[in-house]
Image (spheres, each protein chain N blue to C red):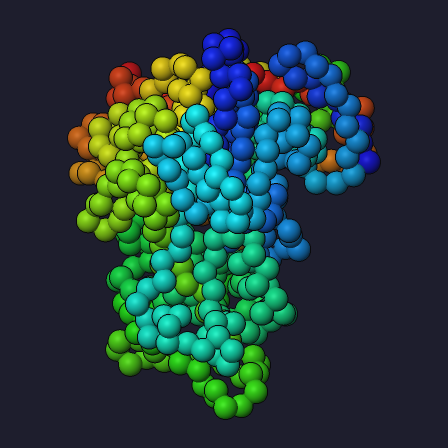
Length: 102
Length: 448
């Protein structure tokens, strides 16, 4: 179980509780704006780009190789960028804050 | 994608109605994009399918092997929040362009100010003896119960129901295209005994070149899928129509024109799709009749020949500026991007549809990513990565111009290909690209 806070491009903050699945699925199934997940979560479209809050980078872990490669397609990619379809919900993610990249 | 957050002429759209026919990737994205672009009026989304709109690509991949009711594109709440009326399970019978109404199968005509056709395509049923519904008695026949196409979540549910446990069931897949191969991989994972029959001399013949065809042939063969090419299926017969149906003993026989026969408990037909043009055609909207297929022609704003009617997604025949030709695409990319284009145009902006097509396919643990269109190439470079297993990319050129990249387990090539097709000013160092010992990074791949 993890509570994850999303900050959207209109600066709205929403905290959601997830049990399993990916962070992208949690965001999409709760209608978080800006997380599209066009490919359904198979790391093919880069439409679930988030920036992990500075203090949470360690918790969130590093992007995998394919994820890091796909992030290269995005404009404002930073060290804290993740494609959240590749982030599995677990206790480890509890309390993290993600800003939707736009 | 850049979204301008300005909301154009809201007063002009207030009280108006935009109807969208078809609630798959294209239609659903159009509905939400309309709100984002500032459409103030009603948005009504129709689909004959009763399920909350879902992702189609996973149907032939994970959904087949997993317990799944489909992955919704959006939660129901999002439609409510954005004021989008979902009318699911309702087919549209006709469009009256003069009165500007659409008539659902079982209710009153509904007025539209703007209409979006996101009508998609349907699987082709090839002229195989036994597959023509008129020659089959659905009451007694095994054929209707054991032969499937795959386009909807209901297809997936029916296939799973028929299979029960897939273990050791004999599955014949007719057609070695991406859908057929993805189905083969999924059912193989479920321990079925799968044979793919392809009419051409290699699988994926229509969509790629021999390099990729032979890679996927080897991949499937290694996993135990039997791939037989140059097999033109001419008939499907029931084995014992007088005995009670028993799926354990191959209920069906598949017969090819060279006389080969295959026993099958279940048959999946994946030989391509045809655009659902009937509704548009009967309304008198221009249909482009290409040599092998039909499509609804649209301009750079996704508008049809009727100024109040737009068309988006798989059903459209549209101009691609990068490749300077008219194309029809079956892809999530085109569905989503054309939806955004149409929504922007409907809200009074002047978009110009100009995207580079991309696709993906997942089979077993292999990820294929494609960017661009390879047709018209005169040079191919196959680059193998020496430090990664089963990772390579196929680069298609016309002269020095990069047309397309197919990347297998190597997203780096897909990403660099995407950037280079977008920016043709950068020239590729073909010698370094084809040299597996030359590092895969811009400094070596690009001419300095």
